[in-house]
Image (cartoon, rainbow, N blue to C red):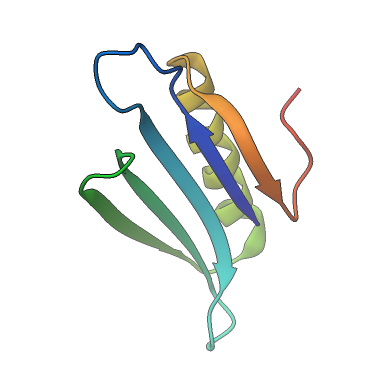
Length: 84
């Protein structure tokens, strides 16, 4: 699954973005990848490992909900339904 969220542009500077990806690893676990940064600028990449899909999906949905509450808007979703 992959989600791309972005702030509304204010006109003064490039908007910030958050990309969340949930991937299965080679050992049967799950990895939540969070990339944050400013469009056209530097970004930060963080990875969290999970043993089962349920806990990984819960962390993915929590990270998505936190960003939506901060005012980010969903721009792109792949492999997942749009948030309600």
